Length: 356
Image (tube, rainbow, N blue to C red; front, side, top):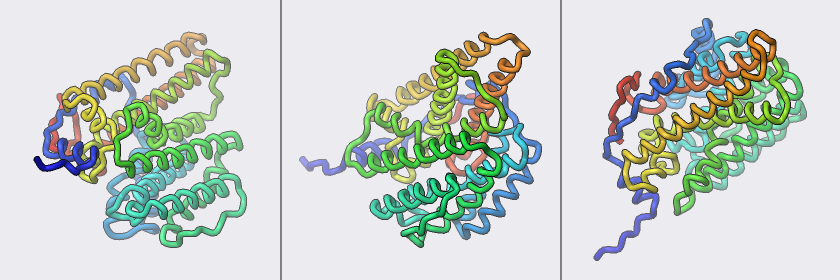
């Protein structure tokens, strides 16, 4: 008998490719949640694309335009002032490009060179810290990839002009946490074995960058949320479940793209590896999504019940909850409208079937 020399990842990839995957109607899960878009969405999209045209060219530029960070941001922050909205849209676009730089063999040599990727992350951390602290920026070691890193400087200047010191510190903390978790993710991508669901979840909640987006929601509402153990615990639940909802939705919708790139360190393949059944893997992913929505709704209601309807704090909580819900529906609608996930559909109504 011929010995199987394929790694667990290669075996998993081979067993998934060519299968049909039924994606349930995720949109129905959010039928009662708001879906909004900023009235200046087209102006915003043009501004983001102008920046992309200065930084990229060819296929890379086409991919960045297709990613449509401006539209995502316009749905994520539909009530923000345009000046702040533009800054955050450029943050989103920068994160898309930075992510591609570290995990897209199509556009970057870093994917095949772990040591160079490590230096790129180290350079990014040093440069982002200096920009957000307002100190002298360092000389970058890697000139090949320096233009992307240094393009963060004007973004940081706009952030520092719009937000206070505490908010900038929060932004910096979440940005650096995101980069740290991409390091952990890369270690598992390079490893021969597969992570457990628990280990995957540990870094996925950072690589989604959703906490960064949730912090921005709070900043743009120009308010303070309540303090106290009970209140802060429930606010943290809102943050974490927003992250969970968006990360799980993305993992479901991006599975075809990930498999096309040879990537199996993501939720559905890992669940399939655990259960040996693709339908059961999807059922478990959907159960996780439904439970997150329930936990979010329960925490939101508990917070709202603490304050009189019409009071300033009740309104603050309402607005924050609405902002988090908008980010979840924004992510879903953007995922269906962008070409980034290769779904080939604009709606999930009634469920759809895709070829992996």
